[in-house]
Image (cartoon, rainbow over all chains, first blue to last red; front, side):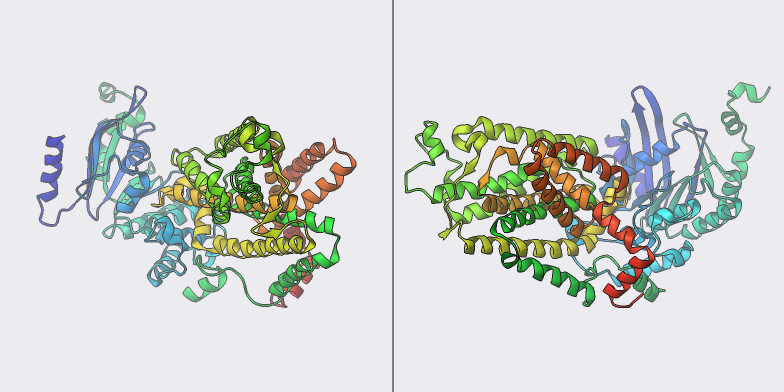
Length: 268
Length: 370
């Protein structure tokens, strides 16, 4: 434990204005003997974009679940802004500055688009403060801005359940952004989108980088190319490769795990 | 942009549509008519109406808990009973000379007042107890359950078990609770002779005033940001949790308010009916309470009041003519409502409002605005 803390501390202080935002440190998640994550580590610097790929069952979603507290690490730690968040309650992790977009759109179907965003944009999320009237001008302005950004300004009053699938995806991205989280976890943000919508989503995500740190999970190669970010490849709960999109595309090991062949086979 | 947003969607936190005008006038007319009931109906009918209005307080609480919060409670009878017994214990004690025991305790051979009866000698304790005992129990119980993330059917079953246990406890502790017969034969409340027309009218108006007050207060609560979050938690508890809110206290607050209103309803009902007994608090009555709200519309306060009045009027009619048939009739009504009319009476009214004639009527009521 002490050694790990020292490592995290060391990483955190190498640069004067600590660029390190998140460190996943040797995390194992054991579901009754099946290791969804197996000693996995990952670090993210502030304001960067990272894409996480890997075949089905590689542990990508489990990693997001572990960072956000939905799944608890059997061993290892998650360090965010130099603090150990491994065992905090989910809402507390979010309040520290991490927000996640789920794989199936997690909008609130019965509420209007603007109410979905208003709930996300609220800074004071303690229950007793919800009895107070009035909305901060800053929150209203932010919601209006996000409505424009995600192209739903004219649907503001519509119930979120009536949106098309792609619009729901964007609304949820908007909600995640509205929380002002430092770290955004976007799990398959282009699932169910056509090529045009996918390009728009890539452009939207690229605009978020800098102000936010973004971790994207996706499979779509053309989407990855448009994002043009560093790629981390996972396989069977472990780290496999990291590099540029081009390097990952050319990598024999990556091709092997995607095609389900073992290392030896790829040369044959 | 900002302007159009404000116009189209009421932002959370603003007061609900208490826009002055014809809807308000219409509501006031209904309340005024209800206030004149003592001169319009017989004493028997007034007593029935008073009981049903007391029950409507509980029904409005269920709108918050079940309709808005999505938490189905099959144990509201417990809180209803706690309120009823709190006021009944006080009235039993107030009728006695110092040192005497209520008659049923004497018959059961008790020679001292049980310790938990003693504080209810004070009218203040009894009246506070009507709301604080159910409120505190509900807060502790629901906090313990919701923080373990137990919900849905499991929560409903636990509350049903609670209702069963409470009724069983009351019956089994006959020497100190009055057992199956409950508590009855009340004479005075805080020096006021019960059973006179003046007392009946006064209690009726008190109940009506509370119904109106609770209606207005819950309407404001549902329109507040708290109400918005409660509905949001109902629709997507995990999404809300992963937006940084802790859902537990929101649900605990709703459940506690529901229990406080049930306690209040139980106390008023006891005053109107002159009796409180285990038959009013167990599993069957608790399910009936849910049916009032299902019939009226679980997301509508006005619907809940209407549903309570309608179901109980029907119960009075059916059970006096065919005593054995009532539970079958109620079961049938429940099945029909759930399958054909999920929005209840309120949903029916809303559907009618969408027809051409309904729209015309609505535009007249709302005052000409589209």
